[in-house]
Image 1: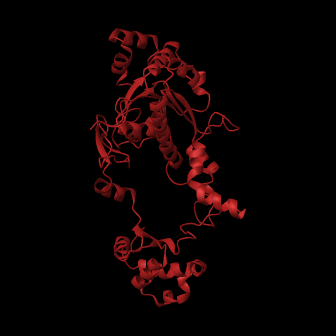
Image 2: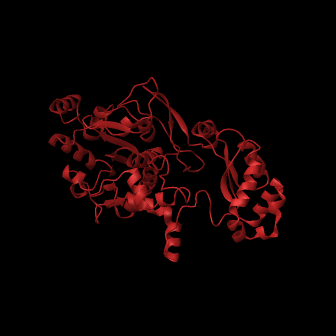
Image 3: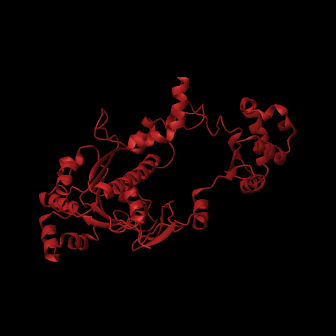
Length: 402
């Protein structure tokens, strides 16, 4: 069965993670994604790593780049050269989707803005994924993961009450934006099937990152008070926490959502202090959360976290031992059908981030790790623009392909 996006060609001007993963997800379902790069200003993801301890460094040794840019082809074009801009414009005439995640106005200043490219290709879906959109008082701001976590309110609700605001580890904001970007492009492709018209999508990564805070914003609106940091607790699931297990840095999360789960937890722990009839009230348990946590941790601390998980799961109490990165990698092959390890000519085996959308029970398709810098330039320009090898060499000599 053909993949749902087979026949869709994407011209990808994105950098780092947010846009690159959005187009990477499209490639999983058959889209031909052509990544436009330049050796004069290398995608920062190629420098970020991680790198193999004894493997090549930039620009072709980054495992992050190879993972988020899976399935793609790479062309190098100098977008500050008039002929380079013309080559990029000509490519945009022959594709279905253009995606960029520069700050607002950058593409227009390069001569590749949505108005110009849509005029040349009226069926084009042009996706801008800037930090704050192209309208409003923050349109000119440059965004990064930490900035978006602060402005979205996420940092204000992460950590314990006594802690300063904390970032969620890793590039949380980029991954959230990537999912929104892929969804919007899919919606635009469906819309185009009906009316045949292209569209400019002006997405704000800031708005995408406010969405996961939705219920906390609603609570603040209702109470007229800012919702603070609860640590690992939840007022609707009591007790909930991360409890120490036996051994160094061993932890297990337990989350009780109803009375049946509470009674099951009490039976497993078998602590008389927890059998008080008053604790059938969520409000009372919340009031005595510290006392309950101490009783739970006295039990969890005497056994390995994985054993705590197993015992509580058998009793239908939601629980999970906290996995390290290495433990996740040891389990993911059997637990995530879309997870792949792909060969790379310089790096070796590269883990590819999983895609959770399975169509008709089939995992998304990954055929290759991310490309070497510019390795497909000649092949893409020949296939899409009909250029000969001599044409490509002439453009290289002129500095348009660099």
